[in-house]
Every structure is written in C-alpha cells, then in structure tokens.
Figure 1 (tube, rainbow, N blue to C red):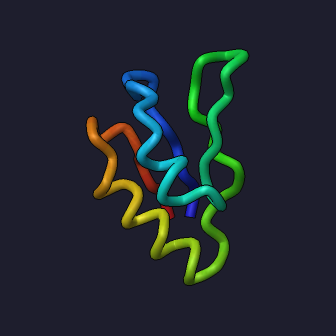
Figure 2 (figure 1 turned 135 degrees about the horizontal axis):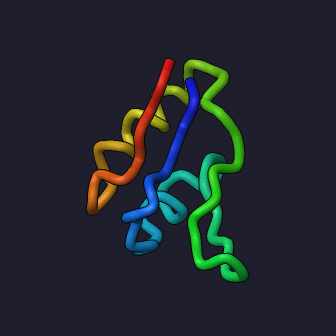
Amino acid sequence: MKIEIKNYCIRCGICVSLYPELYAFNFEDDVIDVLRDADTPELEAQAVSSAKDCAVAAIFLEK
C-alpha cells in the first residue's frame, strides 16, 4: 500500500508520534516524510489508522 501526504499537511506530528515506523519529521524541508510503503499487514493496518487519525485528512492511501 502506497502512502502519500498531501501538501496541505500542517505538520502537527500526530502521525510521527503514533506511527514512527511510517513517518518522520523532515525539519530541513519542513515536511513529514513517509519512511516506507505499508508492505505488511501490520503496516497496512497502521497506515489505515494513521489516515483516520490525521488532523487535516492529508494522508492518502493507494493499494
């Protein structure tokens, strides 16, 4: 499952705090980086949860 963060992300850090396997702060570019695609059932579940938890619905998932 491919994970994309749209440019209207406010960088609140909820995804980084709750799902550090998938997301990290990139302070140099002032963005949240996706560290990897959700390539296991566990990571897919985390990706789905992260999209639901996003404060501004900026996380999109594509199978």
